[in-house]
Length: 156
Image 1 (cartoon, helix red, strand yellow):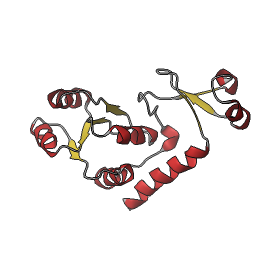
Image 2 (cartoon, one colour; image 1 turned 135 degrees about the vertical axis):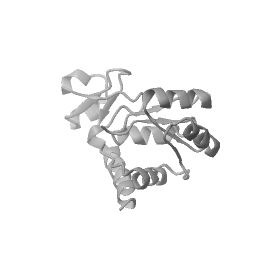
Image 3 (cartoon, one colour; image 1 turned 45 degrees about the vertical axis):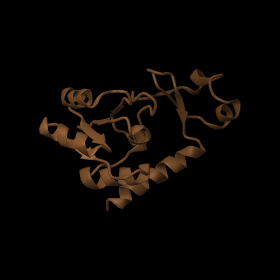
């Protein structure tokens, strides 16, 4: 089973990258530290934070916790790749907004819900059944792949 993660309020951007890399990643920017620790315990999640004191408190309570020592998301992804052996698989991407798994849908199901030019040139679409967001592999897809690949290569 792939690791599951819980990120504190300082790591919102990283949570989206983790989700795009295929990891079940919960994030809530307004949750107190003690509740984060409890949620990590209950959900069997690894806690990621930029707060060293929180890491120490979490570990005392039996939570796997990692201090993220980088401010730049790509460097933080590389750190996780090195420390945990994570591999990032964008073909297993989750919704970057809400963390649910996305489902491939027939093109006609997104007609009128995506820009006309996108609808004409893209054939494959995915929809989040939870928040309704629609995704496709546009020009941004290559940047996502490159970022996740660099993170993985840095671990080698």
